[in-house]
Amino acid sequence: MVDRIQGIKYLISKSLRDLTMALDPADFYRINKKYLVHIESLRKFKLCVAGRIEVELFPATREKVFINQVRMQDFKKWVTQGSNEQASPLFEDMLENQIGISEY
Image 1 (tube, one colour):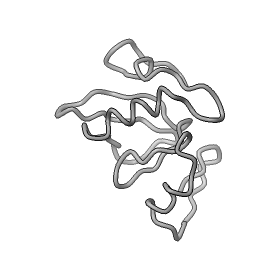
Image 2: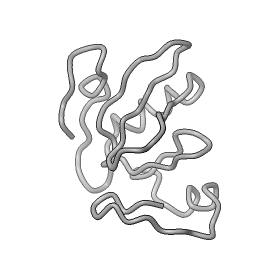
Image 3: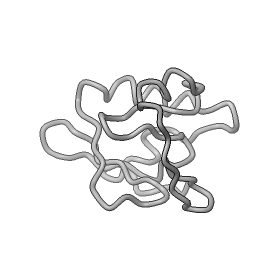
Image 4: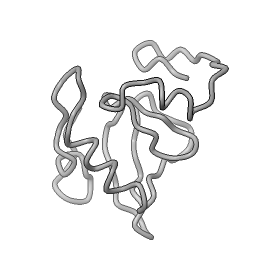
């Protein structure tokens, strides 16, 4: 787990599945097998081949992070609903290939 404000990494003994179930689904989303993200860590999206979306996170990851087509509709709904902490930007506002990049 990474503290997105200070960039400090923590080892947690729980599985991502357990963490997903314990955290508020309005704020956290399991985008793939390796990543559970907070809504405020999203920076931008980019459409890729095969219906996948590349997600840019903050803090940045060493590898590219993708959402597959199966999760895309749920992810889009999650992003547009926002979090409990603050209103979220529209999905389309963060999608690089459509209308530019909005800072989040």
